[in-house]
Image (cartoon, rainbow, N blue to C red; front, side, top):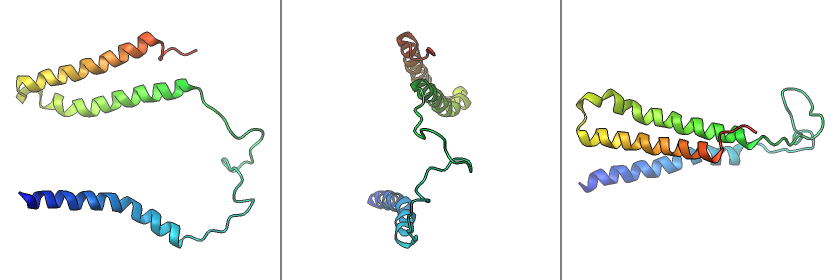
Length: 118
């Protein structure tokens, strides 16, 4: 039994080191010769005109978050829907509760006016 936990511990350690290793190696080995031209803002091959700091309306982010929530909901509900015929009643009730919680969140955002474009 402890051997199974050892494998999980080794996996977690490797999962923590694996993404950081290339970043550290690149930081050590990559040449760094910054100058004024390299530090300028560059967009699509054209020099920027005016202020380069543009703030987007918060509604873009709200719509993005709502889309992300329902996209993840679809990813979670797909296996549940595929196995619907063989699931016990407890799993069906859990899925319905999950849908109701997300619908409640959508209803709350709708009532607060977060989805209104102003």
